[in-house]
Image (cartoon, rainbow, N blue to C red; front, side, top):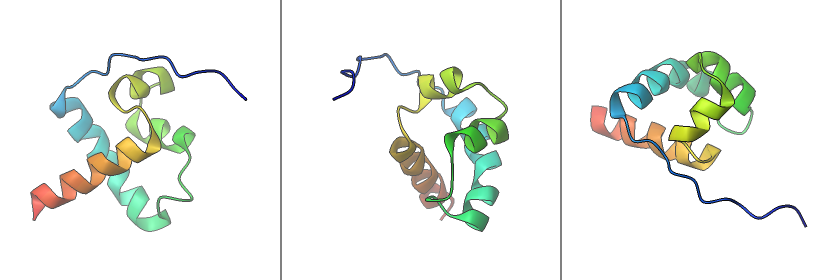
Length: 74
């Protein structure tokens, strides 16, 4: 079954997430989202997984952030 998820407080600092997304987007555009591991994401962002998950709760939330970032550019 697995363990039950724990409700965690997510930090909201747009300047930090903006910097991370800027670093991640080129790799994402080249390789796509399905071939994207969280190990690669945190390596590109230059932070630990624990720190990254304080801002994004999942890969899907990261994708939402990337899409929002690109839409804001348009």
